[in-house]
Length: 149
Image (cartoon, rainbow, N blue to C red; front, top):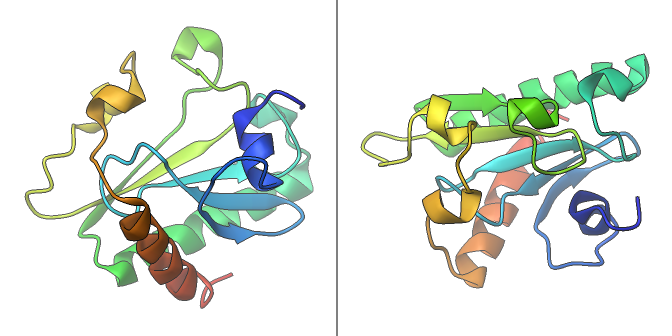
């Protein structure tokens, strides 16, 4: 979709940190991270809802979700929040289906899961990282995720 921020990120029209990408799915660093290593998993082809994904893409999507969780655990996460808002009435803001994969660390001060995915403007609750830190995190997670995908 021409105006979709996630579609633009995949084709690198915008400054994005692509951790992994293939013909079916992509893993990006969230540009408004809740914690270091906060990932967004999306299908590469534009689809607004989970049920719009073809079965083959959905199978790959959930396989890469599993691999991303393994990679974040190896990266140092002590726990992981995974969540999606599917549909406008459920709080979906981007018209592209996605999962947030948020690594949790001891005393990370990230908000709890319910407010993280319900009526909370992402920019207001994100941590501040420099572009150098984002690039380093992207490279670090990319190396670890490469072992699993």
